[in-house]
Length: 93
Image 1 (cartoon, rainbow, N blue to C red):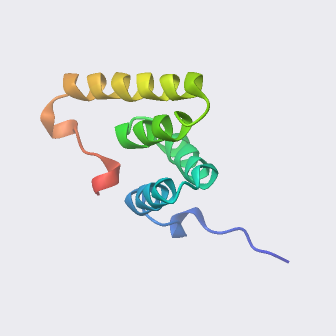
Image 2 (tube, rainbow, N blue to C red):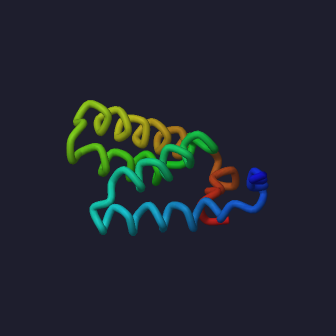
């Protein structure tokens, strides 16, 4: 019997974003997209995963790339409207 991993045992968001960047550098885009999709499901208010998804999709699915880039821009604008003390990124924690 295989036990499901405990979500609290997952690597940090920053570690997973770094792993996705490495996959992008190695041109292993499906692996990067899988990680990044998970990151935006966990927190869709982070700019970096959306930006990285746009980069991944730009190699083929330009519509998806544009959608991800638009989401990154939207999140950035929302962050700019927030008071500076509330702009804590989970990727830097």
